[in-house]
Length: 422
Image 1 (tube, rainbow, N blue to C red):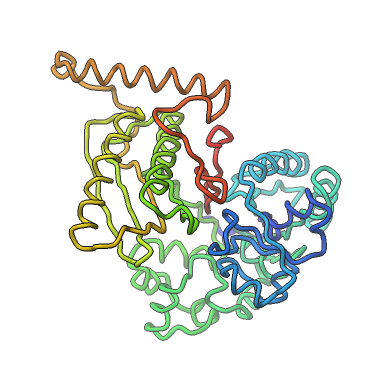
Image 2: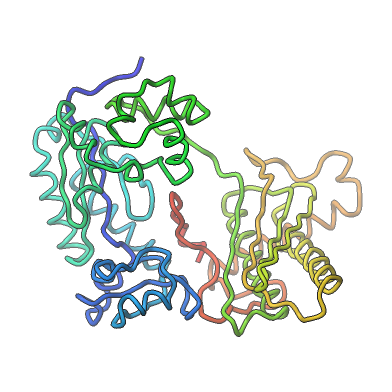
């Protein structure tokens, strides 16, 4: 039986323009100026985090560099420093924990907290305490918006209502009227495709959505998630589903000067090694490797290789080499010009969970099993060296950072990289 709170039980903290705010905190010359954080420095890149000053000119996440300059001629671009953001995330986490217990870090810049009985009675005082300790221990330019509500979904929505530096408290008997002021796309879980489904069902407003029943939303969503969404929207305490990782992947858009076969392949090698290291740190193995290439001509190539469960660099790099050769051969079969490669992506998938033993009774008798054990041991030894001396200390073959700087672990929605990923 689902519990329906009669008072606020959750606090959601959402940091404002996090990457850009961190850059302004670290670099005083950027304060008060429109800036755009880029995944890597290139005129062909796009903004992954605009500052609040840049947003006033219409610069958004995903805005291309050229367009951002047209919208805001004074904008200054800086490369993302994912490792710095992760370090600061942990400092922020510790600061908030001094005020209220954190249930979960939902992303690098969002946390949700369960409120104790005494904390539910003084949300404004608690919010003031959190903001004061963050300003003191992190810096006054790294600001956040807070939302108090009966459950996590409503608290998240509340935290986004008055950004930046907002504070919204939605009591159970008050919040529906505030919800009705929002657009469907303002509700987490309603993206463009779901919005289209709702439109097809004749639902054009949050108020109309609110008055639907749980069974109807289950049909529109096509799964039980629609029913869970209905209960969350109506103030019930619905716990988020726990998901498990099904792959490890890295991708990179190449700068124009690095779109030849040589540099693109070296970048793919680098991404493969970094993905393999993450896999081993998680004590997982993979039975498949995927390579995806996007050419400048907009053509795409995909291929995958399968093997028994492994985790060593050698096996994955061998798979990459074979797939790369296939991709190049197929390109020249259909084209006369040399390929220009815009993006490379690698994926390790078909993961074991929990970890499986390497090989079996019969395969251990075979020579290749013994060879595989050698590569596994080499990978462990290399990991030990990397842990002690840094990611570039040792690798199989060439280690060449792509032009524009930074390749490998990135902060993604819902995933905060381990510091060892860098």
